[in-house]
Image 1: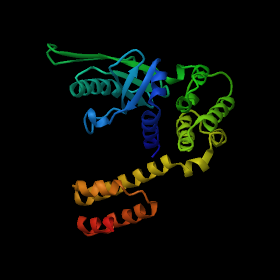
Image 2: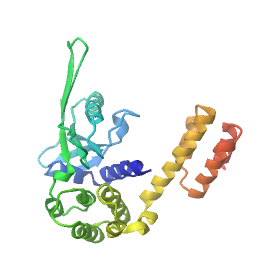
Image 3: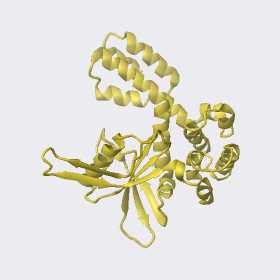
Length: 281
C-alpha cells in the first residue's frame, strides 16, 4: 500500500501539475502543456507520465517523458532505455526524459547515461537523459516560483534548520493558492512524500494529518484500487485467467462496502459466473 501511495501520488502530480515537475528539471518558458495518455507509449510498459509541451516562440510541441523513482536503483537505467525507444517508435520523434529521484540510499547514483551492447558488440544502444536528485534542490528557490503544484516536493528538498517552518510554509501555500477541489489532494500528496523523510505524526499533522488523509478523494481511490488488486489476486489464484469484462467492471467499483463484500465472495464463489453475477448486481 505504501509503495502504491507513492506511485499514485506522483502520477497525480504529473497529470495535474506536470509543469511543476518540469520546473524541477530546470524547464522555463512553458506556454502551455497537457498530459497525454501513457498508452501512447505501450500498454504494460508505461512511463509515469508523458507531456505535450508548447514553449513561447515555438509553434510545434515538445514531448517529455517523466519518471519518479523513490530511490536510486539500477533498474532506472533499463527503464530509461525502454521509455525512450518505445516512445520514439510511437511518436517518431525522440522525447526528452526526466527522472526525479526522491531520496538517496547508500552510495548509488543514477547519472543519466546507459549503454547496452550486443553479445558480439556489433550493435549498441545508448541513451542520455536528465536526472534530478530532489534532495539537492533548494527549497527556497522552489518556494519562490509561486507554483502550488511544486509544493508537495519541497519537504524532500534541501533547506537549513528544522523542518517545521518549511512544512508550515507548504501548508500555507496550499491553503492559500490551491484550487478548492485540489486542496485536500495536494495536502495528502505532500504528506505521502514527506513520509519518506519524516516519520513523525506531529510533523505530518502540519500538512493535515489523519483527517485529510481519510477525507481525500485520492486516498479513497488508492484504497479502492488496493482492494481491487486483492480481489483479482484471489480470483486468479482460484480460476487462473480472469476475463477482461470482469476486470473492467471491478475497476469501476469504488464503494468500500461493496469491495469488502466482493473480497469475501472471491474467496468462496463456486465459479467466475457467480462472481460476475454479484459484481453486476
